Amino acid sequence: MGAGGRRFNPGHPDHNLAILPLPPQGGLPVTRIDRQTRRRSMRLGLTALDEDRACPGYVLYTPLFGAGEPLLIDLRGNLIHRWRMPYPPAFSGYLLPDGNLFYGGRPPADETTAAPFPLWQILRGGAMLIADWQGNVLWEHRDEWHHHDARRTESDGAIYLGLCRVPADIAAQVKGGIPADGDIWADEIVEVDADGNRLWTWRAHEHLDLETDVLTFNDPRENWTHGNAVVPLPDDRVMVSFRSISTVGIIDKATGDFVWKLGPDVLAQQHDPSMLPNGNVLIFDNGAHRRDTPFNYSRVIEVDPASNEIVWEYQDTPSLNFFSNILSGARRLPNGNTLIVEGFFGRMFQVTPEGEVVWEYISPHFAASGFYGEVNAVFRVEHYMPGEIPHL
Image (cartoon, rainbow, N blue to C red):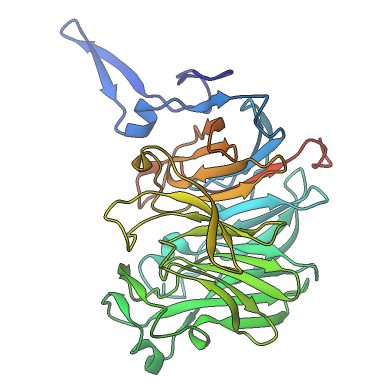
């Protein structure tokens, strides 16, 4: 066990029971075995810490299928702060420079609006808000088509992923995927000001290439692009990630055109691209259904957009040890380490530039997802240095 490591503790209020004793029958002890394999067999909480090489600070994460409680922990796994949001997460939150929390939420669905496709119920959001340290809501914007991601903008508004119906003539030409009855939908990027007025809109179907932006063979055609990240960049640009076509791109907001794209020759259903100070792009490459190998494994890559060359890469050894089919992300830290979340399994860890794990924490917060069963999934993690959070 790493320094400060902790095994499963049935008495801990944040831990669910792995083995629950039942009354004896016929004089023999009887136990009920937890059916959640990962909770039963893995250590939870802090499992590894090399204080000399781990980047110090705090980690913010939100249990994906919980009631809406972003959690801030230190490197020893101590809970530093907890927010209680009015809605379940859709799908995460992050701290603004003033210490307030920007959060995506999922309010109750409008029962008068039919879901565009079955999976929408687990993909949808609907609200983005700002809350203070005590959880009081200071600003909120609603859009029933919001999903996955939103970011605060310099206009004190937000930019976020939405959804729009693809016109029938274009939908008929979309390639790949599992045939489905009904409409085909794609992403719409929306920017609003502080009052919720639309400042900019971009619709994927108006700018994608029908010949090359092809759905993965086993994704439903009804959700062509499946965006999962939108990142405002300097020089009036925005970076976006489309999972179902395994593409990350940078868009010139003035023209709507892509000025850079990285596609399925490199990526496989990726998440969470971020622009590094050196101009490179860090991406969690989930690795489902890679083109060049029969094996599914995840990796984190740093790509030089000038050449599309991978200049840094993290994989586990053997590679099959590290795989999250969905969710997940990565952040480059100030000391050169990389913070990674293997999202579906709630595993957060730091690796050095050489790929050595120097910190690891497994979320102990399991909740019923309705679709995946009871899981401890985490969509994304954020890191903050000591002194960076005004309230601490």
